[in-house]
Image 1 (tube, rainbow, N blue to C red):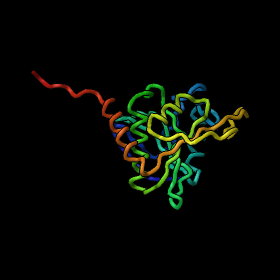
Image 2: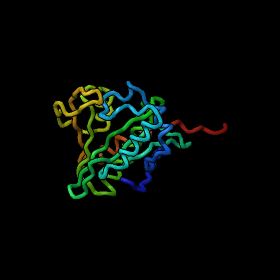
Image 3: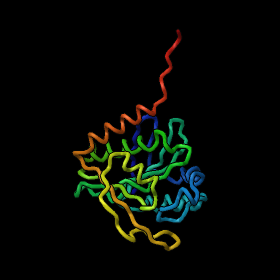
Length: 199
C-alpha cells in the first residue's frame, strides 16, 4: 500500500519504502540473516526491487525503510494485516543490517510503530510473530514486553518448500504504557553519554 507516513525517534527514521532503497537493502541481507523468512532471499538489486514491489502491492501493508541520522539505510519493517475496524495490526517483515543489531535501531523502530498504532490509530492489539527456530527474534520480541501467545504448527513455508512453526506474540493497549516506558528506558541507556564540557 502506498502511504506517506514518516516517523522519527531517537535518531532513527522510518519513511515509506521505495525502489530507491533497494540497492542499499540488498547489500544488507544474506542467507543466514534471511533464515526463517517466507520470501526468497533478495540479495541482488533486482530481487530486492521485486521484494519492494510486492510489499507496496499488498493492500493491508504499510512498508518502511529504516534510516539512521545520516540517512544510511539500516533495514526495513512494516505494518501488515492492518484492520482499523477490528482495531488490530501486526508488525513484521523486519530486518536490519548486522551493524545495527543490539543498538538503538530495533527498540526505536518498535517505539515508533507501537506509538503510532496505539496513540494515533487507537488500536487495541498489536501482534508480532517469528519463526519458532529463530531464537534471536523470539528473545528480541520478548524483550519488548510482548506476551507470547502460542505456536502455530507448520504455519510457515520457506522458499525451498520446508515447513516451520510460527510463534505469536501480542501487546494490548492497556499494556502499552508499560511497554513504552521500558522501550524509553532502554533507549536512554543506549544513548551516548553527553560530553561533560570544558573544565
